Amino acid sequence: MELQQPSPTVNWHRQTDVVVVGYGGAGASTAITAHDAGAGVLILEKAPEGQEGGNTRVAGQGYLTPSSIDKAIAYFNALSGPYTVPEEMVRVWAEEMCRNNDWLKSLNGDPVEHHLQPEGIEFPELPGSDCAHKYHHGPVLGHEGTWKLFKSAVEQRRIEVLYATPGKELIQNRATGEIVGVRTEREGNPFNIKAKRAVVLTCGGFENNQEMIRDYLSNLPYCYPSGTPYNTGDGVKMAMAVGADLWHMNNITGPWYALKVPEFPSTFEMGPLHYRKESPGGMIAVSVDGKRFIDEKHMSAHGKVKARGQWIQAPTPCPMFMIFDHTLFSAGPLHDKDLHHSWNPILRVYDWSDDNSAELAKGWIKKADTILGLAEIIGQDPATLEDTINEWNEYCKAGRDLEFGRTKMLSPIKDAPFYAVELSPAFINTQGGPRRNAKSQIVQPNGSPIRRLYSAGELGSIYSFLYQGTGNIGECMAFGRIAGRNAAAERPWR
Ligand SMILES: Cc1cc2nc3c(=O)[nH]c(=O)nc-3n(C[C@H](O)[C@H](O)[C@H](O)COP(=O)(O)OP(=O)(O)OC[C@H]3O[C@@H](n4cnc5c(N)ncnc54)[C@H](O)[C@@H]3O)c2cc1C
Image (tube, rainbow, N blue to C red; front, top):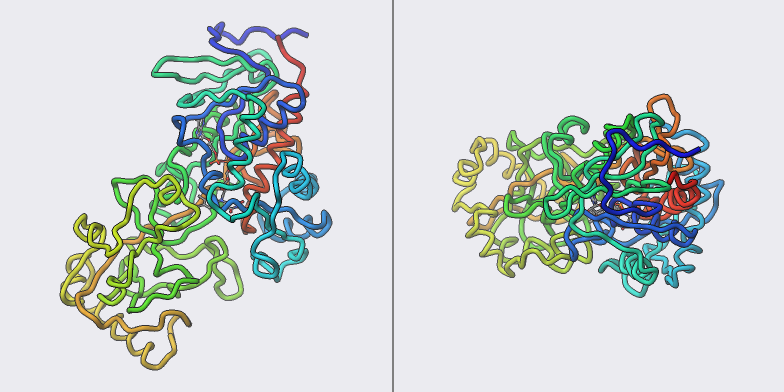
C-alpha cells in the first residue's frame, strides 16, 4: 500500500532510504550495517566537521564483549537491579553484545583486551560478572582508537555525512503515524530529508541541557559533561513529539567532581581527586557547610558508591570545593593534560599551565594566605572550615581517616598559602531517552512501535541503574547493528 503524503505536504530537499541522526558510535554502527544490507544511508551531524564523533570519540574507547550469553543475561539483570528491563530485551542485549568482537574484526578491526580481569569487572559480587571482557581497537587504549576505526569504515563505504545539520523534528505521516523524514536546518535554512525506509535517532543524551537535568535527575541542581558539548537532548524531544514513551531518564554515568568554568562547556578533571594519582601536599573536598562529605580518593563505580551495603549515587552537596595547600599547588598541573579521553584534552581546547599560574590569574583557582581568608573568599564559615582542616590534619597525624576511611594522600593541609577550586558535579553521559524494543524500534507508552523510527546508543540506553564500564560503546555497536538491519529491511514507502 502506498503511503499518503504527510500533511501538509513537505518540500523535500534530499532523500535516501535510512536517515541516521547523530554521528557517534551508535550512528556509525547503524549506518555501516544499513549500508551493508543494501540501503542508501545519510548521516546528519549537528557538530561542524572536525567536532563529530560525540562522546564515542572522546571516550576511553573500550567496548564490552561478554564471553557467555547466559552469564551476560544474569549480569545484565543484576546490573538493572530493581529497575528491571524486559526479559526479551535482556536476551537480545546479551546475544548481540557477544558478537561485538566478530563484528569489529569484520571491519578489519583489531580487538585488544585491556584492564584484564578481575580489574575490568565493575561489580564482581553480581552473578555472571566474570563474563565481562573489555576490548578496544588497536595498539593503544584511548586516543580515539575505536572511534577512528568506525569513522574509517563509514568513509570506506562512502556514506555521506551532512555536518552542521541538526535534526530538529521528525516528519510524521499524520494518517498512518509513520516517520517519513527529518526536518533539519542547514546554514539557517530549513532542509527536509525524506527517509524512504526509516529514521534512526543516535544523537546522544541530554548532558548539556540543564533544564532537563533539573527535570529528570535527582539531587543534581546542575551537572556538566566531560564529553561532547553537542548532546542537548534533541533526540528525547524529537521522539516525545511523535508520541514516544521514555525510560531510564534518571540514570546517569556519574556523578563525580570536576572544575567547570564558564569559558568552556565541558569539565576539567582534577588530578588530585583521581583514585590512582598520588601527589605531595594536603587536599580535601568540602561541601556547602564547610565539612567533608566523601573519601576524596574513592574509586567510584561510574558514579555509584556503596553506602550501608547499597549502591547509591555519589553525594553532590553543591557548592563543593577542593581545598589544598601550596605544596600540592606547586606539584604540577592540577588538570591532567595527558588524559587519553574527555573532550577538553582530546580536542585540545585549552592548554593548562604547568605551574597552575594562568588558572590562578583567571580566578579558576582561589588563593589566600590563611584558611580564614580562603573561607571568606569562597563564602564559607571560617571557623567551620578551620575546624574541618584541623580535624583532617589530626587524622593524617594518626594515619587514619576516622570519618570516611580514606587511605590515599593522607597528608596534612599545612603549607601556606592555601587554595580552593570549586567543584561541579560531572558525568560522562545520561542514559535516558525514548524507550526501545528488542528490534531497536522506539515505542509508544502502550508498547507499540512508532513505525519506521529506531534508536541506538546512549539516547534511551538500556542501562537502568548500575553501569559496567565499556557497556555503552558495546551497546552502541549491538543496538546500532540491530537498528541498522531492521531499518534497512523496511519496505520503502515511496
Ligand atoms: C570521557 C568519556 C569516557 C568514556 N569512556 C567510555 C568507554 O571507554 N567505554 C564505553 O563504553 N563508554 C564510554 N563512555 C560513554 C560512551 O562514550 C557514550 O555513552 C557512547 O559513546 C555514546 O555513543 P552515541 O553514539 O550514543 O552518542 P555520541 O557518541 O555522543 O554521538 C552522538 C552524536 O549526535 C550528535 N547530535 C546531537 N544532537 C544532534 C542533532 N539534533 N542532530 C544531529 N546530530 C546530533 C552529536 O554531535 C554527536 O556527534 C565515555 C564517555 C565519556 C564522555
